[in-house]
Amino acid sequence: MTDEFPQPNQGPGVTRRRFLRTSLAGGAALLAGKSDVIFGAQSSTTPKMATNTTLKLGGDLTVNRLGFGAMRITGQGIWGWPPDRENAVKILRRAIELGVNLIDTADAYGPETSELLIAQALHPYPGGLVIATKGGLTRPGLGQWVPNGRPEHLKQAVEASLKRLRLKRIDLYQLHTVDPKVPLEESLGALKQMQDAGKIRHVGLSNVDPDEIARARKIVPIVSVQNRYNIEDRKSENVLVYCEKENLGFLPWFPIGGGGGLKPENPLNAAAKAHSVSVVQAALAWLLERSPAMLPIPGTSSLAHLEENVAAARLKLSPEEWKAIDAIAG
Image 1 (cartoon, helix red, strand yellow):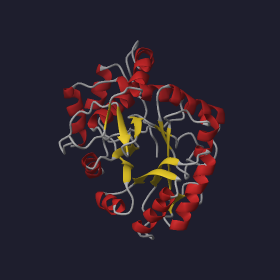
Image 2 (cartoon, rainbow, N blue to C red):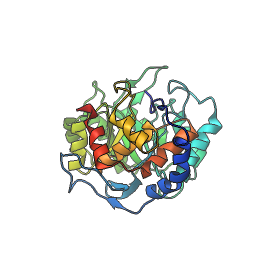
Image 3 (spheres, one colour):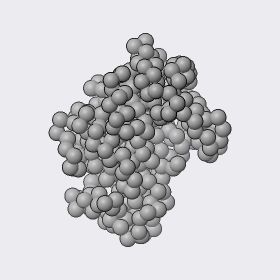
Image 4 (cartoon, rainbow, N blue to C red):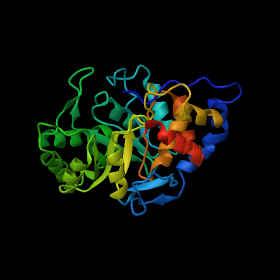
């Protein structure tokens, strides 16, 4: 998995650096904006360009609608420590400086190293920062991702994440995946017990379908869903529509996509060229405008790419550009 794809060739004098100079401050201001909605009441199955800069998770957690995914701050293969730990710390601190106030991680990233780096870089945490982590997916070896939704494992995982993150309560704890060997109701029952014990504020899901979300909500209130979604891959479109209707946040993982299925001449490249920005920025802008429920969490191990991603919050596509990009997967 990766959160980025190569940058297109761009003309002289414009591109990432110029856009960043003019947009970075504005992008940070936009991320820190006061506009917020509890979405869903005005949502429609027909896509409309979203304009909200923040959203509320669970009705009480206001977050800026561009977060940071902390998977890529670990070592190669999402395994072990990164080759430059100080760079990882700088990236996390810079994300906060730029106005990001939701960081998404998981105990499987490293495993454990992503959570440890977040605590090293940011504890004591600034007010308003939401740390969202996940459990239920284990890493017995490099390249291995094995579900474990057993109640006893999830309770232990919550306790371990609290210790690594140096928290008394996790604002958003997400079930990383549904374990086919364990009834979903048992997995969510364990998280509800941890929530009742005051160790979890809100519960989210990842890699689920609408039926599984509905089942989960009978056990514990759900505030967010994290599924794979990008311009090319919209298999979770029905999940996004569900989230809009039911007032749930939708965190797309792999939000940039790979770009491998796109022709060299396509609406995304055309929009990027027209605005003198990168394809990554155009793709993020499209996501932000796709739905008021959308909360992209692009990740990177590069400071330059982090700043580029945040600057994308200021980019506004025209209705014609947005519709053309939206039609790519059609």
